[in-house]
Length: 181
Image (cartoon, rainbow, N blue to C red; front, side, top):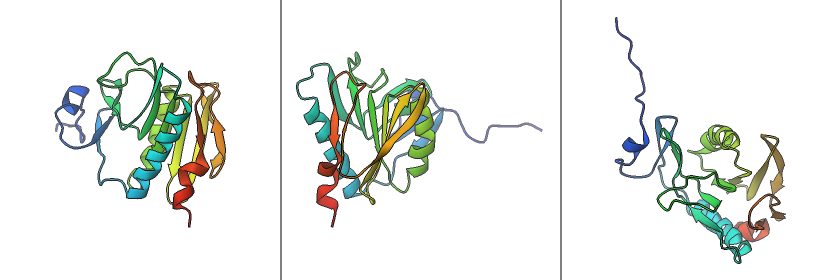
């Protein structure tokens, strides 16, 4: 009797051939469908704008959305928003981002709250923000001594990031204002 793997193992070379939006997590392909809701995308755009505005004078950093971060040959993620600095590659992100933002959707909640949380922590991402668009809330984590420490739940507050190359900040009131009823 032979034993075979139930799940095939894929690499970055395989990933490059796929159509549609995918992520590759330790050799396992993860589809990024269905498309996020309008509120999801608008809130992500507001966060991108807030970060971009706050680092306007900085020539070393960029704020971008849904760009591949090639962590290894079997892991490629596409965070909703990242702040990257001094990135030498223009094909995909190679250096650890300084800030990563993931906006939760029903299909990605476990992936963002568990798998990505652990991976971003192990990759030493200084700040990880998980946004809950239905609650108009962001949970912000800061890496301290190799572990994420929750800095708080943010609804209307301003958070200034201490450990970034450019002095970034987010006004969460501006992020969620138009969605509150």
